[in-house]
Length: 261
Image 1 (cartoon, one colour):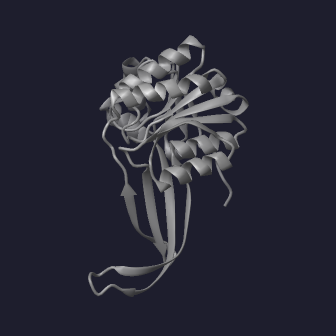
Image 2 (cartoon, one colour):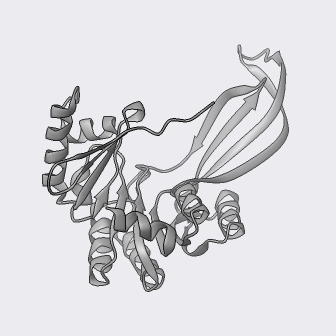
Image 3 (cartoon, one colour):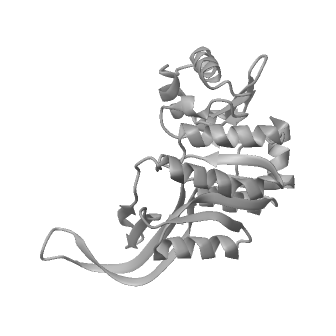
């Protein structure tokens, strides 16, 4: 797995998946609405940052990699803001396709009195069409020519489907490029053939249908997921217990890093 990690920081990365726009609405709440028992927030300012797969791409850029993003945005202000935000961070957005029939996934958090009052989600979770999947694969071809690794970032918003993953793996394998998946949901079969999958322990437990209570059950779940996906490696994050890496041979247990507060 070390070769994949090295590629993340030292080469070009292509991030494919569910891009989002995270919006923060800051305001002041001093009274309760007469219409319902909820606070009235007077908006003072609005800010936004790339979210979902777009945030993954920004983080990869912060590691020093050259990054291209492939995904879908709507024909709306959130999509324009997301594209501009990614470009300002130095990312290639040529693979960010506009779909007039699908809104940009936007999560708006209203904050007042030093806390989040409510979150408003605007999204479409329906699976993308075959035509949209083909368009994304075509958009992948150009950045793949210079890529060292492909990251598939799945947030269960409809973009990451089995057919798309198969197309990514086929194209990447032809160039000797590893494919890493940050998964979501219970259907790990759609990730078949990738090189590395990085679920957390809860996700691994659900996808394997095995309750994880100790190392033995963790290893059974990992074995089932590797058999299901044929992934070269599986890295399960375990919160305060660190991480567990499963490749061919005995597993490697990595302790959690300690931080001084």
